Image 1 (spheres, helix red, strand yellow):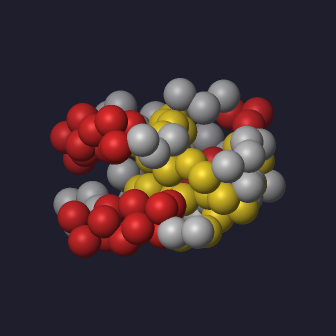
Image 2: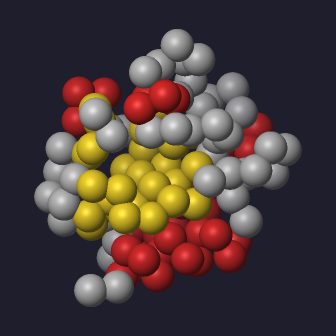
Length: 106
């Protein structure tokens, strides 16, 4: 879990390339997606989770998250790519694959 103070002003306070899943415990699609996301760590990618369980979290607006789960790829703190979820589904495999490809690109 990423501490909230590491995500602010549309940036991630970490260097390198990170895939960050924005998830909410109340969302069945987030619960279904979480194990798939964790599998990415086995492939050598740096992953983290941002908790959006609270609807009052400022992260919803700071990162323009409309649907959970959504995955953002950060490189040296800036958003490089987005795989936004879809209402009633979450992100599609092709969206997640594109996020992984963006994370692995030089």
